[in-house]
Image (cartoon, rainbow, N blue to C red; front, side):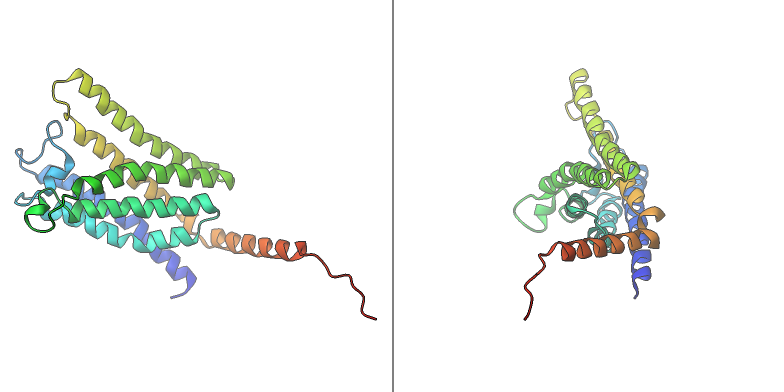
Length: 236
């Protein structure tokens, strides 16, 4: 597989993975029984409890989406133009690892395997690391002069904060401290998935961008060579 084919595969995976994850989650909200999920009274993860009609759809969608996205993440890391973009790509992978963990360590998984409950740490990893990945990558993009991508990354990261702030404010107004928690989860999921779709856009994966990275790397290499001290000792 040549470089062009690899980029094409990575881009397709970057498009399919978030659509698959979001599609599975929101389809599950439509299929879930009222006692399993409501936007006001439940968390999204309640649809992944064993015995619910949405168990396989919800958990399977998250796990498969995470695996499908691996080629995209590998390309994004390799294509990073500076340390912040590469760090953002690594943090993106950590957040996706948390998403996969939500599906693998579903609510009540201790009844089947592992004594330690790992669902909450997995969900926390996803929701905490995802916006940090977006802010980090966005800052790196801005430093490279890519203001459009940088601002999209920063503001989709900010959307997480707005969603959680809305939930905290609703807690003060309502009697149930967990009311509408699923809405904030959905806002975060949409913000993260939308950002990945932007990263997988054609402008991020075209041959011209790849060529520019290669030329930049070559230019840095030549500059480093020119900066080396020259031995002016004459041979007699």
